[in-house]
Length: 367
Image 1 (cartoon, rainbow, N blue to C red):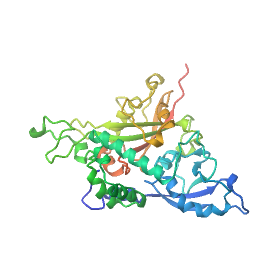
Image 2 (image 1 turned 120 degrees about the vertical axis):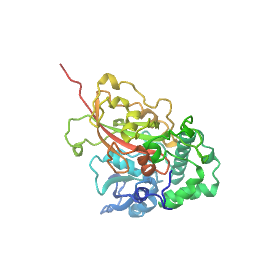
Image 3 (image 1 turned 30 degrees about the horizontal axis):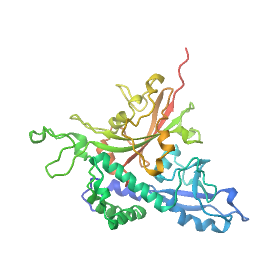
């Protein structure tokens, strides 16, 4: 991560780390054993956090109403079990076409849906999923993850606590030791073509000895809308993760003397959705999308993603499509914004940039 002049990061980073979603948590009717039923719990959930980390705050609201048994906690939204390893802010951006505040979720303490969700053993599962993702990101950026592997136990604990507590300054201090350097904003504007560096590639060492890179870790979530709607607020509820395609791959940054934008990054990730005269409303034919999996050999997955997430990667729209919305950290950015700025300011603590894309699937034209 490229740090700003202030010890606490850039202004945009501070907004991201301070971002929270108001939740209204309901206990599922099947688990209510008292009359009257308990009122919903109101809580603020950090955008960069994970839903299971909220359980210690939520359980006291419902503990007196629970049936006997062992807790196996999970959350759902309108009948859809929520994947615990996806950051809360990403889930919200992906599932709420029209932001819902407060976000009404249902919590379960029994009946874990093991056929849909991978097991979660509480904070430890989330911590190691996070560390694993950090290793993936380091490997994509630097070509190895030895700095993560060699991180001391105190530093690892401090890094995780900074994420738990939303402490950006502490996080920047500890993560700077890992030497995971993402592209700088000046890199996104123009590669230095001076004589002294004309023969160097983006993976060569710069004058200070740090590794420059043109590979950015990205996790792309594609929500397919297969109904003819004019407004996204009318988008149908997602009842199954089958409606979500998942791509986990790096973006190769190539400025070629001009600004490398978010639009350029999306073209690299989803070339099927763009033509030469590309825009967010560009359409494609069915034949152009029938390419199947988009991981291109660069995909890697964390423990929380093994299984169902690997299958999701192959579910791209099949009947022609158009991009209706791009959302990152709750923001719907202009696609011409420099990609370097987006990465350095809006990526999550795991060094991945999580991008949600709404795609309208078009019906084939009958002649």
